[in-house]
Amino acid sequence: SSATGGSLPREWTGLGAKVSTAPDTAFSHPLMTISWKGIGGLGRAIFRLPALLERYWAVFCIWLQHYIKAKLIDLLVNCVRRLLVYTHGLSLYASLLSLLAVVLYSRFVQLGNPADLEDTVVHQRGAVESTPDEHPDKPDHLYELGAMLYARFIRSRELEDIEQAIACGRRAVDLTPDGHPSKPSRLNKLGSSLKIHFRCSKHADDIENAILCHRLAVG
Image (cartoon, rainbow, N blue to C red; front, side, top):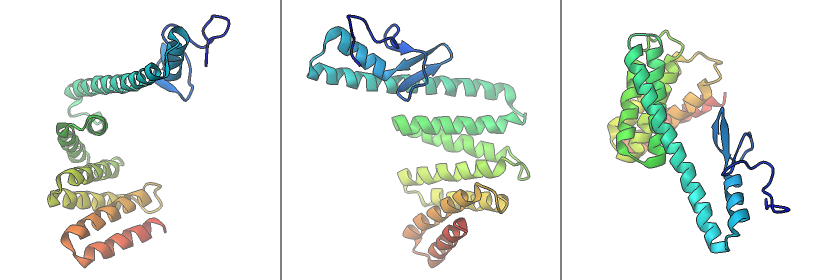
């Protein structure tokens, strides 16, 4: 959008901030939503940036988006860590451990820090160990741990990681009742882990079990 009659478009307030649920939303808060489109448009309207500087402005907006996301993740990690101190021994503790693991994995994907991936596995394993088998969240925690071990194997190529991922996947499938909406995805993930293991071990059982898992997943 461009300014008309010397004024900014009506949806802009301040430096591109507006209360909105538009798909270009970059940051949402109960008090304010920042629109990347609004920020970029404001720069064009005020400064009449030439094409080269406009590209720099777009790069800056992308950097700012990642910066805000990283800061929000850091804030969430710190908040969950504090909550864990006060909820140890409570039923909520395992769920918070799993939440922390998921958030740390998100930060690993964004920044690539190996320490975050290691912490992810540690905290998700803690969630599994803190949850009894009869608890309805146990299969979810096992599935997430298996997925995180799978991701660590892709990075480390340590055979133990994919073997543990398979063990977690099998337990998750065993604890998931037939007809459960998550059973197909868990079977597919187990099948994928078995195929990866087959490439390393060349054991025929791995590929046969992988095919069986994928067949069961599609019914």
